[in-house]
Amino acid sequence: MFGISAKATHGPRATARLAALAEELGYRSWWVGDHVALPDPRTPDSPMDAGEPILDPLVHLAYVAALTERIELGTGIIILPQRHPVVLAKQLASLDVLSGGRLRVGVGAGYLEPELAAIGVPLAERGARTDEYLDAMTALWTQPAPAFHGRHVAFDHLDAHPRPVQAGGPRILIGGHSPAAYRRAVARGHGWFGAGDSPDQLAANLAGLRKAADEVERPARLGPLELNYTAMTPVDSEAHRRYAALGLSRLVVYPLPLDDVQEVADYLRRHARLAD
Image 1 (cartoon, rainbow, N blue to C red):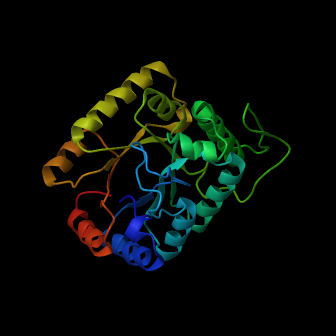
Image 2 (cartoon, rainbow, N blue to C red):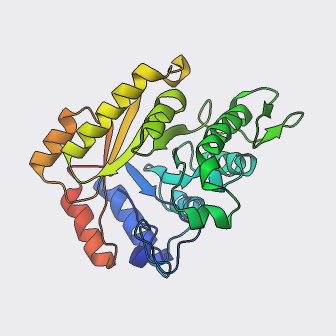
């Protein structure tokens, strides 16, 4: 289930109601997105109007962690170049500890130039920063004496505790639908996190991931690539069968347009047997 940190669903009562319902219905995971600021007036590539509310994903997930016991908590995705990796590594480790190891971390390079520029990140640097930040966070979570030296971040002779509950840190999922995102998923992610309207779109994404696997090496520590996909349209039994046949690890439903809490609750009930 994706998106319930924005628009009509972002408030504390709505979040508490829907989180309890999702766990009662047996949903496996709860995913939220990330935008620090949005262009105003809205640009064609912006997913929301600037005046529509969307919560910080880590603050929101900490609240949901306190309301739930079993459901996995995921970012789908954090715009990684906008967040300092040393600070973010601490925040993610803390959330993993407080949730009892339920955290899944989806990250992406971002694409809205005004949002990135407002935080001091040139659009042309977003890919390099994403790669470095992932490596820096992994160093903080896994090395006995953490050290990292890159162009955009560097540190040594320090440490950060508590470490995440999950050995090696939370599972990292790389979001995106570009060749660069596919290569990053293969080389640096435990999995890939995508979105689209149909099984046919997913099949095209999987072809891109297979091509990337021929171009970059996958570290053995990452294991098999986990495939996560958000269906941006309602899913019926036939679509669910087709998604499953493509080998998904997790199908996530998105109860758009998030304008009415009761409609979102009804959507979750209708889809509870089909997806995460």
